[in-house]
Length: 342
Image (cartoon, rainbow, N blue to C red; front, side):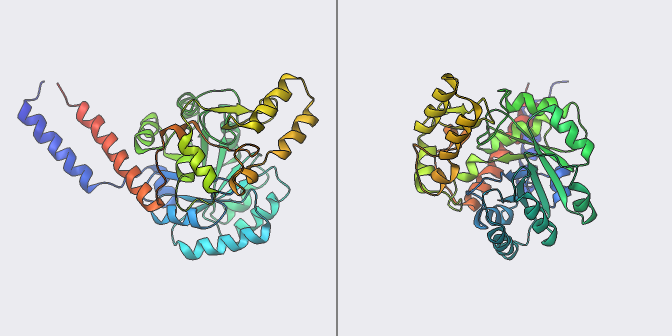
């Protein structure tokens, strides 16, 4: 049955009013965590290794995440205390499980009753029960269906599925976020957080439509006033176009970053057939700290996702979150309007 032009206008007007009064979009994951919006700030070493960025994101209705990775244990505890004072809303703590400080980080998470642990680069099974006993949510970062199934079997509350577009350590198989997330969603039952290649609310809407329960953004939150990185880093992101990042260190654990002197040195070493010990030694000289804190754009690991090419400004977290939510609502409203056109 076809609707008249007047009926369609009335219907769309009603839907527009609905969205104006229902700007908060809830999913099973937002309800589980207790946040307003299905938006999660990625745990980024240095950029979110201080309380400022995660506190601002949580205060704006998303889930801010403190990155433990590069921190000393005492410094992490101080930042946790600052974060708990700066925000009364849920927040997360990102802990890479492979590092020598991981057990100390996990102990701090238990001690301070962190609402959400987001773990990566290691298996959750040996640790998870202690967190369940205290009612702490455990999310696990995965790069494939195989890892997602293992995480689900271990009892995690949700998985964070990233695709090849993501900055930092995306899957080395070059499978895109669109494919990777959908592959996981078709085969597991726990909530899925999708990440990689998203810089605006339109991207968030696309991954929610795919079936994700929340969306993680990294590079976009790196480009905020509260992110703790050198100004050179932010300026480099603004200059980087969508095709100008590359995967470096494919013989090890690859990193998506800019094409600088360090990247070319590693690529050449792999071409020359250097052994893993030699390449590992080279990797130690080009650190993320050198880029993020010292501003060295040539010999530091300038990690960023392909979404850098979609970012045109550095905003406050408050302004960015408002923009993301508005774009998300605009995208969702557009789909509903299109579904009722002749």
